[in-house]
Length: 254
Image (cartoon, rainbow, N blue to C red; front, side, top):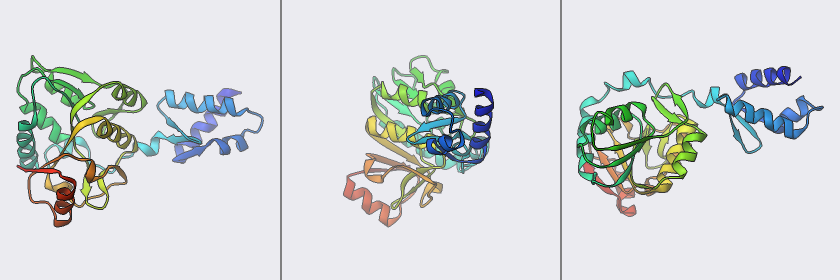
């Protein structure tokens, strides 16, 4: 019966980061490949897996982030994050369509933003709530699954929404930055979303306090060359500075 089969598939998704269609075909030889694909789609709708080429990735492993809880990060390097956010204010233009990433630095930026007519799309629930305290900004928040660690929305629904909009300027906050590995984060789904935003944005602004320097997490969502502007609170390492110069990246010190 389908209920027993899906219960077994659910157990597999709890102990394996990737479950291939071939493996399912061997485990359930009397079930058609089409039915097994529908099983994968079922678990994707339940938020327990992501359908990928050749099978499914388990959400249990994807959503295990290497970052600290948001409530703890909110107070770390608070002064540096505030200076970075304040410096980034000079880049905002009335009437533009901007994307605001999630994260504590962007939350500070949202708090400081002037009450002007700017269309903002964000994945950060707390960022959207902060912007709603103002009268003029138009605030769009993507739909999808909520990551409790980052208080951010991601998943396929979020990707589909972002594919349908235009972005003049994106303010992106990585979890780690290095010349070798580029901009990285600890969550696969967030990586896919940030990668799409970087591809769609006309201008990409990296917001980074010095604690992110020379730090690499498992997933790279873009290289330094894809960035147009870096806003940071201190001097960058020599290799990163040289890479930025070669790519024509503007560096703004907070």
